[in-house]
Amino acid sequence: MAQAQAQGEVLGFEEYVRTRQDALLRSARRLVPDPVDAQDLLQTALVRTYGRWETIEDKRLADAYLRRVMINTRTEWWRARKLEEVPTEQLPEPCVDDAADQHADRALLMDVLKVLAPKQRSVVVLRHWEQMTTEETAAALGMSAGTVKSTLHRALARLREELVARESDARALEHEERERCAA
Image (cartoon, rainbow, N blue to C red; front, side, top):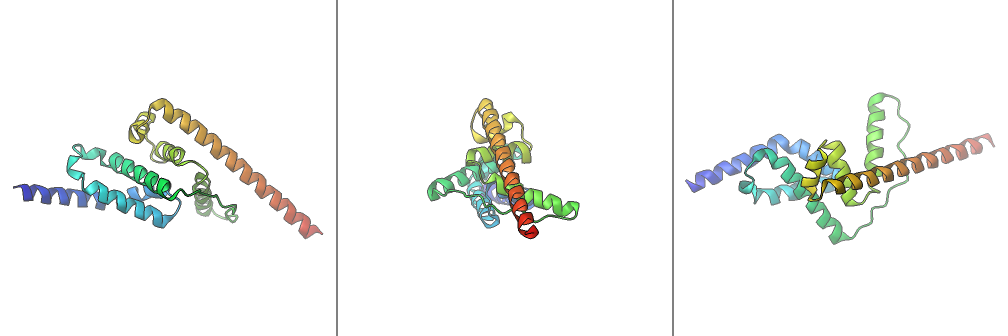
């Protein structure tokens, strides 16, 4: 009987992973800038979650549980490595069509997210990409709703500053290039 129940839990976890893997990988990709690191993050989170799968009573909350595990894992990695993320100064090439524009905008936004502290990035990702409410974000991150709001406010202000700075840098480069071509 216990073995049959354990087999059912394994099948339940495998089915969950099979159906939610793409969405979970997108969440992981938003939490870490490198695609390979995102895959590693998801795999690590899945391994950690598998060991606790039977303790998740409401399987509808499995996504939130796994996101929390990914955030905690990412934070552990960040602390262990003590890495400083340095944003690149490269801007995407000018695009011609809408799909390419959207891809370039997404790439720029992913790059700009690197300037945020991990806590700020987590709040932005959960609120704006995962479209969680303030209360859901607070519960997922283990903080108060007020902290989520203030962290989000500071993070969005920092993103605006970075985008303005990059636009200014791009205009300066464009101006220098025009002057060079005119000479």
